[in-house]
Length: 558
Image (cartoon, rainbow, N blue to C red; front, side, top):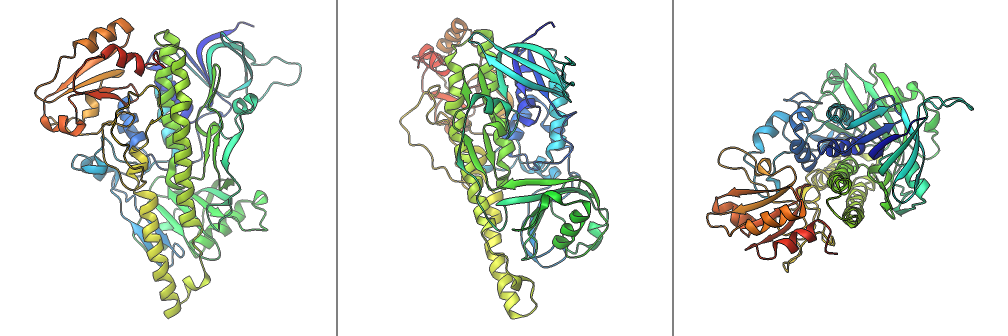
């Protein structure tokens, strides 16, 4: 059996693994990705792509493809709450359609100044796009229907066995194949073989019980062509039912007839045994009447997790995505956090494979990403408490004064909650690598970390402030694909020290000049060093110490 030799072996072909394959493929790194599924996701799964994730898709050149998927361009993306879908409407957050988002983003400032706004699209569509682009890179070998069987880190490399799936019968080699890789990344989900083999335990909270979004949930992927015929309200993207019989939420998959429906399972109910008939019964409870539906798939999952692995790395082996952190999906943070894991790890693995940076650069992955996972799981837990601990009493559905009072109280709470959970520029843009040894810190105070409030800042360690240029381009579109030195304002100091130091260190750095004084004011400095993952590594008034700054940024000085 001839070994496969590769630079990076990725276990898992969900959003995290596929995003990592794109990051590595565009840098010419030999990558083998295996996933036991026959293909990308059939079920909708995650349904919200945050603005920062869309900015990364834009950086890779396919944000427009993602935005074209899912809902029709003129379909509302509101989040709305009802006693039942055919009952009283309790609260609503109106949000722009996909077409409006493309127009509106160019006029938005402050917290929502961005290259891209969020997009409501099911993960199944995103994965298909990620896979298509990953497969286009000549150095990528993407294998669905294959799984990681075992691995060993032997110091100078990782030796692994992969197998075509289903597993061959005992005694038969079947599609088994040995792999020798420089690095292994386990992006293989919450039951990660990689994490378990490494013996890395979870930390955080699990088993949290709530009336809603805490405990067992029943998921149904369904087709309901007659839904809008009985639905008496304005269309939305997400529909949430709040009643004492059955709490649920439902996201529109295609804006026409397909929906991802998730209902709370009560104590004493055995949802593991539920069939398509039960799916129809539970859906009718949330809807408030019976209509014909086609059940495309159904199953259970557990809400109430806010878990983070105690380590993200052992030697040459890393974990990312759901293998490293497990969310209750309020806020839609799990999938988006997973994408940023891949963005962070991708450029570092590529640099290490090429021998351009010290191995210590890879140690920064856990240092930078684990605190963000703890932060984001905490925000998701807070959002879940806000909606899940709110009691849905029978009086909500009563006619008369008592029902009116109860619905008014519910409307006040849910109106505040929907803005807490879904208007989150601080969560989306405000993640920072404060304790990273790769960041050249400065004396300014860290900005407050607030879910619903964000003030753009070029303080090193965070996302660069965004602006639209006079020629219509996004500032981010002018960044180099690897390292960028922004030279801002009409009078900038010489950038020659950075350019010569970058050549000596083998860093692919481009100097990008923008003369507008407003950009210099926005960054509060004429020079800013931007990493390949679009994080500010340093800013300053002059280029003295350029070699020291660059060495710090790529891991040589810690």
